[in-house]
Every structure is written in C-alpha cells, then in structure tokens.
Image (cartoon, rainbow, N blue to C red; front, side, top):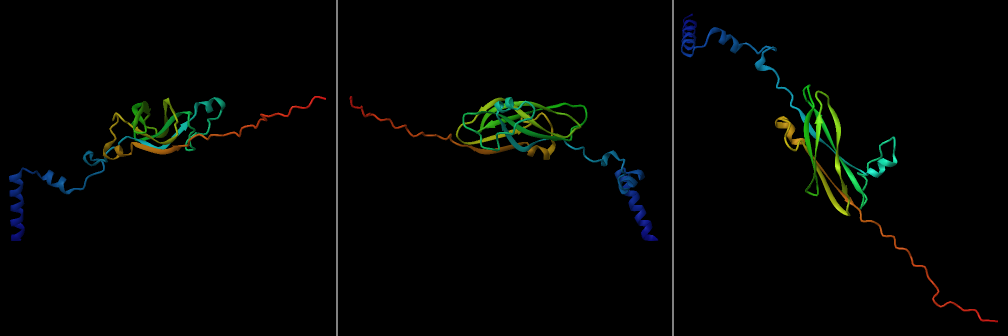
Amino acid sequence: MKHTYYKMIMVFCVVILTGITGADLFAAQAPPSSGDSQHTQTPQWPDVKADGQITLYNPEDWKKSAYLPPRPSYPDPPVAGVQYQIWAYVRYSGFPDGGPYPYFVRIEVDNSFFEEIQDVAYGPTQGLTPVKSSKLWKATPGTHTIKYMVDSKNNIAEGPINEGNNSHSETFNVPFPRLDIKQPIEKNINPVIPRAR
C-alpha cells in the first residue's frame, strides 16, 4: 500500500512539472484510431515511367497500309538509308482527378540530343501511351543507342521512389547494305567476219 502511495505521488509530480494533462496521458497510451488524421496513409505518388521498349516505324509503310498499323521496323534490324520515326513508350499511374498533367520526354541518339516532346497524363486513369518523335532519324550502318527520359524537365513530383524508373535505352546494329556485284557480260571483241562468196 505504501509503495502504491509513493508511485501516485511521483506520477502526480511528473504531471505537475511537465504540464501533461490526464487527457494527454490517455491519448499517449491509447492506440491510434482509424479515423485519426495523424495516422492516415501517405497518399500515393504519381508515377510516369519508361515502359522499357522502343520501336522504329518507317512512315512509308504507313502509306501502304490504309487500315491496319504496320509492323514496326525495329526490333528487326533497321535498314541503312531509311528514315524512321522513334516511338518511346510511357506508362503512368497514380494521378489524381482533374488532369491533364503535362510532362516532357527527351530522346537521345548515340548520346546526342535528338528531340524533346511534350505529352500529358490524364488522372486518375492508368495506361500505356507511345510518345512519337516529330523528327525522323536516318539509319546509318553501325551500332547505335537510342535513349529516352520521361519527365525530363521534372514537371511532376513523383516521390523518392518513382524518380528512378524514368529512363530506358536500347542498343542495336544497322547492317551495312549488301553490294550485289553482277558478272560482266562477255562480248566478242574479235568477231568472225564471214567470207564473201
């Protein structure tokens, strides 16, 4: 009994010295309620990311196919001398309602700037969209690397995790054109002149 009495006095002194009220002591011991605004989950960050694929389209193939989109020229080896449109694929999610939310996609070819394109994400939908270059890239023989960076101007705050998935690159080879060497046609440089009769 005496120990309980001393404990009560000590608790009372701590309350007086620190200014903690009984309600504060109860709140500190009680588990957080589901409706407590201080313990709600952190809202999901928007995410625009490079989806990990690049395709090259030959605009001339589009003209030949009036109804169905043609098969992309790349991943098949591009042909030297042909001009291609670059498609970079972006996947976005986690945007609140009230969009559109503009962002930029930067394309580089062989570590050199090629083009920066503006696109938009529409919240709260989630989807995959191809961002198409307005310029055409002319394939030349040799090894090439195409890289694209999503949200290259940091228009969208994506949180500490989602900023790390914004770029993708692919390296491919453009074969040298085949040289078809035709065999020369032999000509008789010493024709036989028939004898006169």
